[in-house]
Amino acid sequence: MPERPVVMVGFVPVAVTSLAQFQPEGSVIVIDEPDVIRKRELGPKADEAPVVRELIAWEYQLEGAADAFYNAHPDLDPAAVAPLQEYATPFAARLAERYGVPTGGYGALRVLRDKAVLRRVSRAAGILNPESVEVTGPDEVRAFMAQHPGPAVLKPANRQAALGTRILASPDEIDEAWAETTAMDEGVMVPDRGFELRMLVERCVQGREYSVELLVERGRAVFGNVTGKELYPGGRPVELGHLVPADIPGELDALLRAETGRLLEAVGFGTGIAHCEWIVENGRPYLVECAGRFPGDGIVDLIDRAYRVDLVRAFWTLMKGEPLTAPLPEKAPGAAAIRFLHTGAGVVEDVSGLDEARALPGVQACSVTVEPGAEVRELRSSWDRVGSVVTEAENGAEAVAAARRALDTVQIKVRPAQDGPVQDEPAQDRPA
Image (cartoon, rainbow, N blue to C red):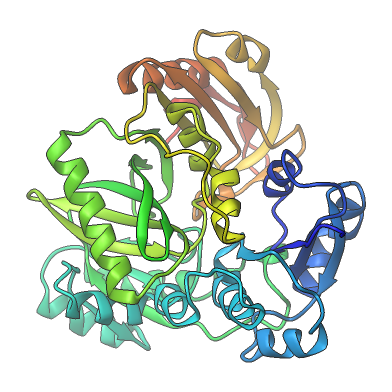
């Protein structure tokens, strides 16, 4: 009998590499948007991966796309179907339902995918949410800020990667922020046809931010982790780094896991992985958002390193409806951190110090994604960061310190896009 394929919705190179560690050659089918396949040149990348059987072009982000796909491929008989990108979550859940394989559930993923709906559902379940309202223009944002003094957050209800999110310190920023946030473009990551943008304005909750990752089997968490998050300063909440596990008291760790469990129960989540973000204000966790997919930003790699697990393999085991061979650990024997790099906007002149950074104690990986001649944009979303370092240590403080030392060693010379003096300063010290 040939191996039943697993279906991955959304092409993610690191996910393909992970699947190749335990899936036979030719056992993975990838579905992605035709425009995205073309713009990202995914065909050759799929051909170069022996584990990939086929790359199917499908407009999966359209309503009814999963049922149309099922009717076009009734005999596919996959062992599992799972999303690897945010926009793929409802389609993958519905497709899994049609093929009769485990899923978080189409209804649950529709709720998680829409931040406005998630606010209503989670608030009804007694979960703390910031004051929030959908808005269609700057005047409605002004009315909200007049009723809720203090800083506010303007953000899309249906985008990803912190794209189009702005912290408004005062009403004077509203018009400029509205123009910016509603014009954000994800380029090669989305189809050319675009989609309707819906906006929210919310009270800006003040406190430390965390995320909770839960691996869930039929509504029961079989693994959990709390990640500590650090953001770049300024008006755009882009993540500067993550620490696994978060360096927090046990009581807060337990509270964040419990609230995430309550949230998944409230939306009716079945089987899969969830990544939920929280801000703790005065000891109380407020929901930021929650995704029914793997976290990005290298968090899965950090979990594997800190807990000594293979989270990807455990996930696909459950998505195939198979039992885990052994319980996953409750506590991490070590710690792992990732810290991201951004420079001032401009044109890259030179990159140096990478080899020295990689040789430092605790450093597991260090990379820069730009070369001389590349243009670096102002930091507006996660896509604008230009490098990262991953570290391991016995505890969180050591892991973070090692990451900072490594980025301090990396030097990037940047000149303004128009003629001007070259900037040359330690990478970690550059402002967002």
